Image 1 (tube, rainbow, N blue to C red):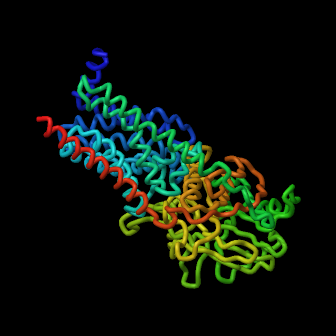
Image 2: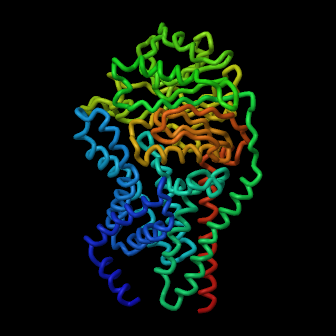
Length: 525
């Protein structure tokens, strides 16, 4: 034990070793993310990060080491973004490492800010376990919250996503949201810091405290299991959804000589023989899987009428241009006469993918096809289509924005998410994306139908359970029944304020315990 203590002391006393350790700990934590789920590494990586911060001498040292941890965490978790630059390799391949490293460096700033805040709290509170552990968890969750909206926001891979393998462990987001679950997760996995902060004679008692905090995990399982056990499996048995996953490579999707072939292929898949559930009543294609610009007088919707089930509807993604010349990334719904029944415009656009921020100063073109930027739509909306319960439409990564996927004034009965993960190849990206879908389903108490060009297409019920799925890079159709929604959850009613209230209650509890401990200590003196 003394030898190990000497090694740790030697590492913590040298700046270079501390910096290298911070990066390594960040990369190690990536192993807990989807689709790996090696959860125990978080005890080492998060506790190691906390030790670095509490032993830092200055706030800027805490900032640097927090940033380096974030660099490892985001570079390992977001490496898949680089695949997008290989779709048109001749033009963009050279930018791939710049983009991945640049995005990771930017995202790591949130970790740096979180750790600076934790550093100052530690200096003021001292080694008080009642405050220290929830303070770290709160700072981490606060960083995730900032990351969800600053500079348009990119809340990918929240810490709560490490439970994606188990809908049971994710059920708490129905009350406290994804942000609240991230707080709880950080609370558990930084708890060994108590042992580090304790004196030699106090370490046994500190170990007992750590075990007590870790009891949160079985309590999460018991609570989630009680909620999900016997939960409704009811569906709309008169609504048969057909999800079409054509598995069209992104590099070929917009090829002038192949575009018509891609559309005809999806039409043929849409009209395949009915399965055990009977003939489909509604057909769904993925984001921009009609690779044509839809103009106001376009004949394309009418041409697609042959793929629409009788008295049903076809939903497809395509870019559109309005009468004013503005371009949108849109979802269309057409009936069996080829008439457009509804249009939804994507409102949360991808920087550099669908528009270039600060275009006057940025000499880049967006990655998606076509010149010029897309225009953002007005925001979440509930669509009403004959033969279907009202639904919220969201396109691609709009699903990752917790608390901002449905119109709260017109609550839908389900959520439709069309996406195109073909940009990211056989990477972890599409798998991480699916976990975000599960989190939104539990938060809102609404089933989610996800349609992806190359996968993963899935039907997720209101408890985050995947009822049906087509795997990544699999071509096929998926016929499924639409699950029934449940009553609005606590999170659906109160949004992110539920997450903040939960974290605040725990932090206030810690402050009360700290105050009582000081009072008892003074009384003994």
